[in-house]
Length: 79
Image (cartoon, rainbow, N blue to C red; front, side, top):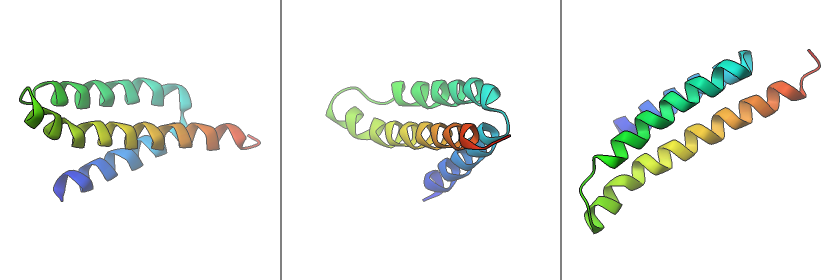
């Protein structure tokens, strides 16, 4: 439950950064991706490791989708 809340806060934060400054959001997104990737790499090998890396992979996809949507929205605006 706490992981879902933290990922939601991070996704919302990256959405806001991507909306305000699309160029800066790419660097921030890369740092978050590397953090989630390294957390997924430290899991146990084998089938159990696959199960343990799934939340990190899903979190990474959610954060990437949020940031991508914010950049797309920002570039559609007239200013």
